[in-house]
Amino acid sequence: MNIETLRLYCQVVRLHSFSRGAAESGVTQSAASQAIRQLEGDLGARLIDRSKRPFTLTAEGDKFFKACRRLLEGFDETLEDIARVQRRVEGTVRVAAIYSVGLHDMGALMQRFRSLYPDARVRLECLHPEEVVQSVVDDMVDVGILSYPPASRALSVIHLRNEAMLLVCAPGHRLARRKTVRFEDIAGEPFVAFDPDLAIRKRIDREIRRRNLRVEVVMELDNIESIKQAVSIGAGVSILPEPAIQKEVAMQTLRGIPIGQNGLTRPVGLIHRRQKHLSPTVTQFIEMLKKG
Image (cartoon, rainbow, N blue to C red; front, side, top):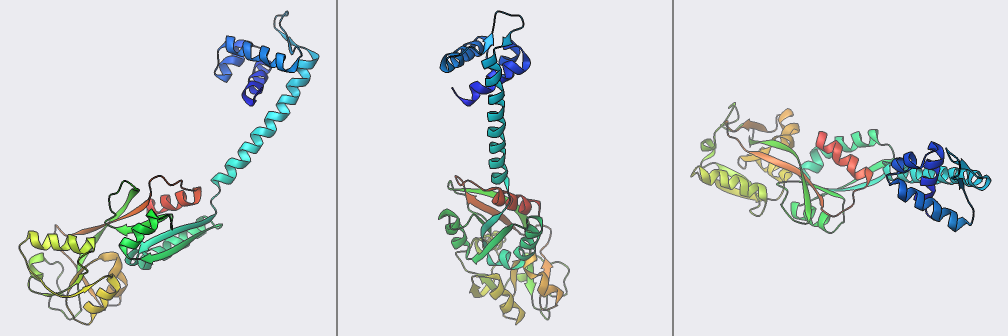
């Protein structure tokens, strides 16, 4: 005796038909008839009087039908309660992000998520790109957000956006009044670069080498904030993503200039463990980020 057999019995009784009850339950008429005979055997009582057309319920069959309905209603309500809990958007989403994304984008996104889901929270850590990846792999966070997300069998990658990369210089620099620049315009310029092991540095270097150009690297730094400070005091020029310099451009402490028609873009993506079960809260957070 199991729940599905009880549900089948109730369908047959409700529809006054073995064939229709069987079809509703997704079984053959023969299987339905056999299951109910087995049910009668387990109970030691006849439930259906098959000598009449259409069949009728015995007194025991009617009592058992009413008991089954109460049992199934309670069972289904319990399943729905459990499902509602599983769908509830509450608790904490653990996020690791590179500094440029965490410092410039996540504040507004966290506030929006809080307004949409008052019972949910976002816990943010700003880390070096390699640390973001390792935190996701080690399950220390639910999702990671970084530029140039790595391909890996252990990770699922969701592309979020492409950010325009601009030439960045101090307001008094000779290129500051240009509306656009070419890569050739920075040849020989003192250049404030990212550390050599960072993906963004490798991408910029490839673009410079492709044009057979050389720049004079005067500093190598591991984060955008340090590069912005160096550029603002006239140490050199750099190439940075537009969202990361919007505040400084508005304050006129830096100048951001588009790089020709074939300028660079920085891809930003989200990563999570490929085999990780994502809670409804994490899933909704990801969906919000995808919508921008």
